[in-house]
Length: 169
Image (cartoon, rainbow, N blue to C red; front, side, top):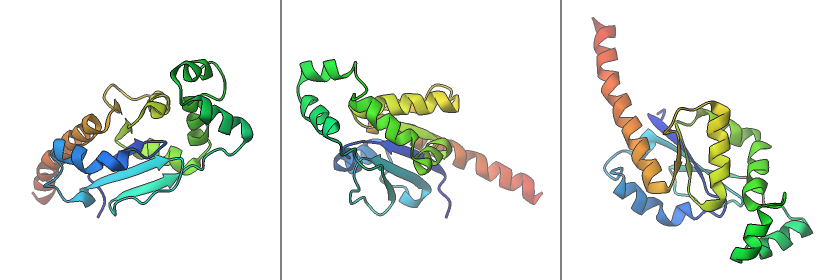
């Protein structure tokens, strides 16, 4: 069964999994067949995702500079200083995302790109700009993104019966 609506959840540290069920209930998705939604979670590392969520792992950079940058990004002052370097976590994740063909294909085919955490914001913004999206297709926050996905789902289901009626006449 092909999903009615799809979203790419961009969450480098996979924090989306902890709040996915609660966000889905808040968005009103709890009573709907989960197979009607195509959800792809993009993270640094492979994680155990629920059965209806596809997981795409980009592979965390392992170099010594990246380990130092990860340690520095734990503190507000040094994190702000990192923003001016190529080791910025946002920039690093975007470069890995852009270099992954499967991730870019998922992003281009998804109805909604959702930034689940801080280091995903730039990636979602750049994906939306590359696609030439109109407002509303790049969303910050899991509950808001899933609510928007529900609206797309409902709108498409409302259109299908009329198309079927026209075809049968």
